Length: 73
Image 1: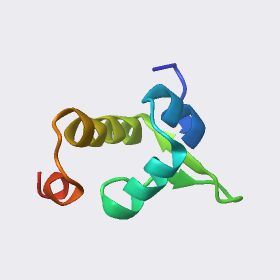
Image 2 (image 1 turned 90 degrees about the vertical axis):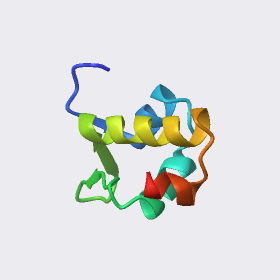
Image 3 (image 1 turned 180 degrees about the vertical axis):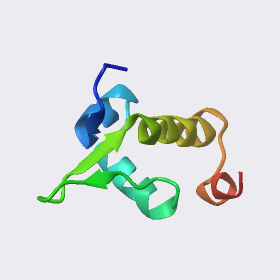
Image 4 (image 1 turned 90 degrees about the horizontal axis):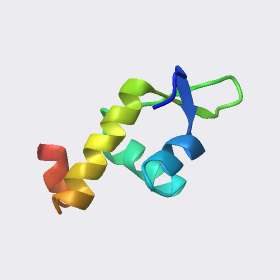
């Protein structure tokens, strides 16, 4: 990760090889994932948010869990 404090949704999506709509969907499904928003309403992910997205991606894509099972985990 770069030495940046905040990342745009596009940067996070590119970093983790996901589509931005997947991140927006996961925000609705996982209450733990709540990126900050600026005055215009754009999402800005912190390093902690990126780590959470990485964990969710691992559980869903690599371990093969469903959304419901991932929420429990």
